[in-house]
Amino acid sequence: GENVEQHPSTLSVQEGDSAVIKCTYSDSASNYFPWYKQELGKRPQLIIDIRSNVGEKKDQRIAVTLNKTAKHFSLHITETQPEDSAVYFCAASNGGGSYIPTFGRGTSLIVHP
Amino acid sequence: DAGVIQSPRHEVTEMGQEVTLRCKPISGHNSLFWYRQTMMRGLELLIYFNNNVPIDDSGMPEDRFSAKMPNASFSTLKIQPSEPRDSAVYFCASSLGRGSIGEQYFGPGTRLTVT
Image (cartoon, rainbow over all chains, first blue to last red; front, side):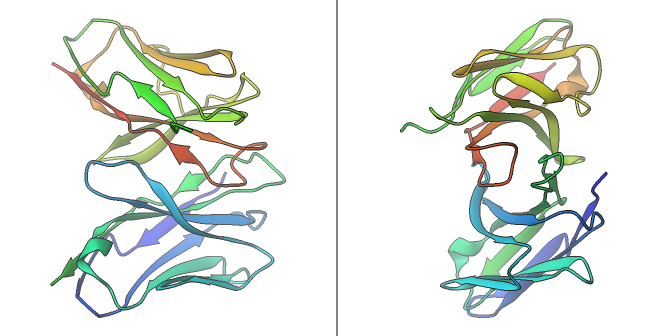
């Protein structure tokens, strides 16, 4: 089955800096890669996703890149703000197979004012 | 739409008692997922339903756990008998279309404490 590794487990940055979270996956058939943000005590919510036919996607201050050859994808947050502090989860799933998502263990991002 | 609804939001019970968690997915969504979240194990998929049919229950930890989806608007996750190690936040999520190839909408979660 799919295995998703996520790094780092904790990331501490100063407000205004950039943050990068990386994930690797094992199943070359995976073709959908969402990122979820979970604020303390809240539910996970989708912030951005990418499909395998695209190498990069941006939405304001966040972007995701995908390298299918190397089987890794990354979340980039620019100009971080204190409200970006949360746990971020990556996931991978195979739309033509089991459809079941496999989540990474999460990255706790702390943005210091 | 009110989003995914879960009840109760908090449950405290004693070891050995039966616990039933409830979920109402977003209307029109045909995929439903139950997750368990703990600090030690992260976010674990327990079971996945598509069109009310259980497709994959390989994440269900043991026979004490069971899940049903009698219709498109309701699902339950039952633990009988409950144990302290079952303490966790249980999330229900739904999505439109087959499987997870699309956004999952999570409910607010049920925080279960077994003493």
